[in-house]
Amino acid sequence: MILLRRRTELGLIVVGALITAGAYALAGLGRDAEIPANLVPFLGIVLGLLVTAHLAVRRLAPDADGILLPLAALLNGIGYVFIVRLDEAQADGGRLAGLQAMWTAVGIGAFIATLLFVRRSRSLERYRYTFAAIGLGLLLLPLLPVIGRTINGSRIWISIGPANFQPGEAAKIVLALFFAGYLVERRELLALSTFRLGPLHLPDPKHLGPILLAWGVSLGVMTLQKDLGSSLLFFVLFVVMLWVATGRVTYLTLGGTLFLAGATFAYTQFSHVQDRVAVWLDPWPVADDEGYQIVEASFALADGGIAGTGIALGTPTRIPEVETDFIFAAIGEELGLIGATAVLCAYLLMVGAGLRVALRAESAFDTLLASGLTTLLGVQTFIIIGGITRTLPLTGVTLPFVSYGGSSLVMNYVLLALLLRISDNSVAARAPARAGA
Image (tube, rainbow, N blue to C red; front, top):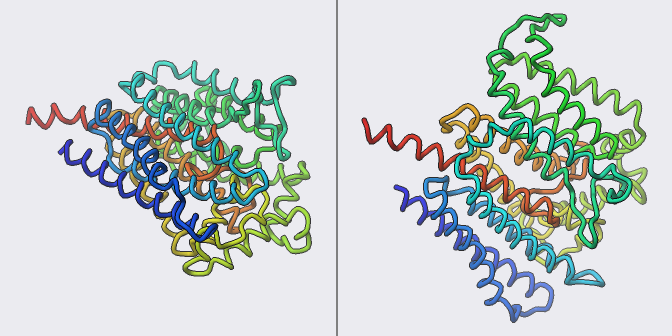
């Protein structure tokens, strides 16, 4: 069974690499009317990186889920092809593509390192308060006067020498570890109803103190940094993990109430929130200014139609920052509804696989952590695609594994490794029981 799972994973990785190489060839045909001369070396590098990751899983987590890595590899490959295509259309083309290739290699290195050093996911539970301190510290870093940087209106970056990094990407995973550890410790107390707030029956507030403090500080920092997407992501992570830990719908109701209250407060107090909502409702009056990105993205998706214009045959470069926040619009234009739906299906399969890992986990900590990590992946995808398609106000988060960005890509590979480690531990824990039976 283990051998079959790993062989299936390898086969899917090869298929994903071939799809990536085919897309790379089509991009060259669309741009120069000829197949790129470096197609074979490109395929070799892609296969080399992915097979290295596969061999690491085969050696370090042989019982792990076999679909997560191939799906991540496929999304990463499609994203890289579009970054190359978009980058070469710029005046200083080549810079972003080279950096993304480097970050992909670093991400796979971080993936292998996570599998190597985290042999038992449950061992992370004992460091829950350390994770809380590290997570909050990471969120505070961009606010420091020397290393903090404001880019595109959001103060979410730190600069150390020539390198820029978003510590919030790491903070999301670290705080998910804290939430999982704390909720396992207090889940029975949190499930009790000893405090009444209007029609709601809640646990003693003192048991919610540490986690509410971490949640409140994280949202406060995100508000100061004007990073609406991460604020929403942290909020949903908190509510979902609390609900999974206790099984009480009351927390979903309370979470929805807090969300409405917080959204109303943010809208009345912060002008940038009002601008985002106004552009979401009607971008056309400001189509030459604040609404320019979303209007051009709408035109791009409309131009794509059902089958798309073809890779490198569209004009997605009209969209500012298309390689980061709006890369899904470029995919929708050049691959059409069919290609965009395929990307969405890949994310749905990843979320489904993550939830399957959570359901099959042997410990409460692993269940909560897998649920939290899957929530991060799924909600982040929903937020950015919803913003591009005007289902939600635009918040400016990246599309996991697809958008350009080193910190996001590396942390998503770490997230992936943690899910695989939980999956491997769960299957390994059930094996002695089956043998005994």
